[in-house]
Image 1 (cartoon, rainbow, N blue to C red):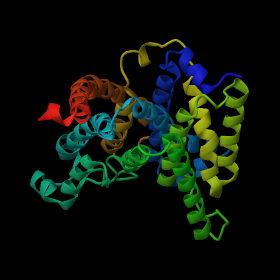
Image 2: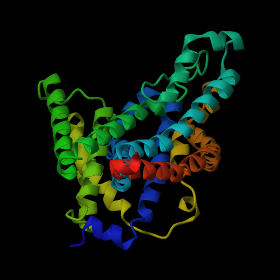
Image 3: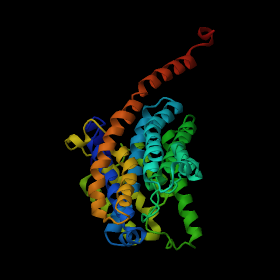
Image 4: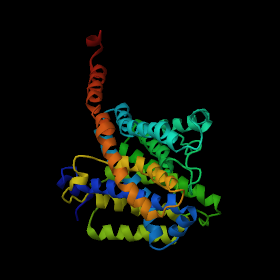
Length: 371
């Protein structure tokens, strides 16, 4: 039976499946938030409890993080130092995030607020929102903005960003430890300890009943999903891949997420495999995934535009109108984000590589040559 590594090699280590997965999952987040922003929390709770829809919804973010883990592990493999790895992660996350926060706070916020401009800028919520540029602690509200919407968050989707940063830091720490030990084993053991600690923590918190979790996945589960993606990459030459396993992973994920709401942590394991199984497929690329990666831009911009549409309609707009109107605007801004912000930022990888070459060269030269 072919392995995941075989499929990767057959596609030249650049299978189009991951491009389609990124775009599909980003659009799935947009669709889900179309309902959340317009219909409110009660409707979302109802959807989370429906079979099989609740199980499918539960798959979206764990798959996103597993995909990220698998691809970032490839970046880790290509990075010769921890500093270069972390620098590449920063180039991927921060430039577009900073632009999104500044655009929201300095342009959209003043337009949509019910306060005058001076009161808006002086409000503590304004400065708190600007700290979202660091990504470590997210503030969701802007002063007087979207106060009459079903939910007042300006960028509710950003709650996952700190967990993405935790994933990078955790993987960076594993890289440092792996300098003296087997990196694959360090990461495998670290993931097992992390997952076990999470299960034990929530088990003790619920008297081992695991029944009081609300439908949505937790940030801790997303970190585990990321690390599972990393492990699948590192052990890709040993993990079998076939259409039967794809179907088995899909069914297992949906069933666990649907019928074991308190045990969703166990669903992230088949979900991670499902993500990679689909990602290593290599169908022909269509224009949407050729030459631009708009998934991050869709993630960043969809929520604020959905909230704007609802506010402009007096807080009354059905989800399908929110979806239909926000989608083209978001895609447009996502393309702008890629070509004007993300792609130029990623172009800095080459000068970073040259700096890394010089640093490594100095480290390996005999002391006499450095004198």
